[in-house]
Length: 351
Image 1 (cartoon, rainbow, N blue to C red):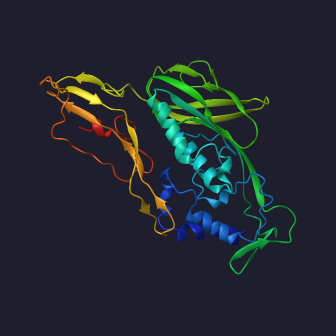
Image 2: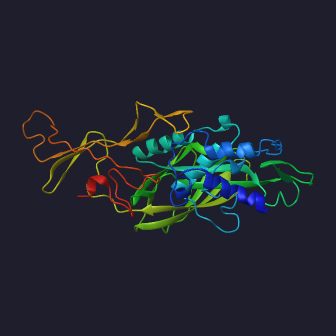
Image 3: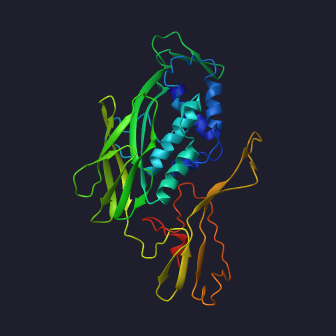
């Protein structure tokens, strides 16, 4: 038991830059294989994998989402960040990723596309996964020889199974008037049962609302602040599952104008033009530190034209004295381009 338990910590200490990720979520845009996964595969290369019926061995990733134990002994609460992290870890810990409808980056891009259309996307993860039993060595189901693990003579499997259902909105915050959309492409799982609908208590003092797949519902919040949404996930086979997720309700921004080419006026500041945030990708690749793959940076860009006399000459909008603001390393996406949050100020409203 002690030897197997030390496997986690030995891997953690051997991977540069991993320890700090316990305090913050890692970026969503990551390679499909990791040094952590390669290390675990090497240690378990002689162990029989045929008993991993789910095709997912959760030990192959750094377990930040704690999926084997999440919502198992108590009612845990997910969130947009947690659900995306959970999907990332499920994807990276799978031996065959062909069965996943989206890559982690595609999941994020889909959610962002819906959010830009003024819809709050709701997502469901319904997965079966396996993880190593920490008592496998003690029960002789695994043995350690020359630094590698082998199948032991003990009876039973060294793997434990976990059935898990998560549901959450894929945005961190919403205004008091919000439109929630149950996107059929965000109902993901490997348990062979299809999600038919969600019964959602939006924590706004009203009765739970039935959300059908492919349909949107409008929700009104009488107050701002943190909320806890409660989901009853209803499946086509008649089964159900319970889930919870956090959501922050914020007051409507006073100078929000996110439509492409739209304009608004604020007292004493003149004309403001905000263009929709665009997802951009680097043209030049970054060679990773092992020299084994090329990675391309990704991020959002927002263009804002703001000048009291922008259109006074009658010749169209002019950009004078441009200022370019670039945000640095932000793995949890806390710095927003044009939306204030509870924990941070947007770049465009900082002044």
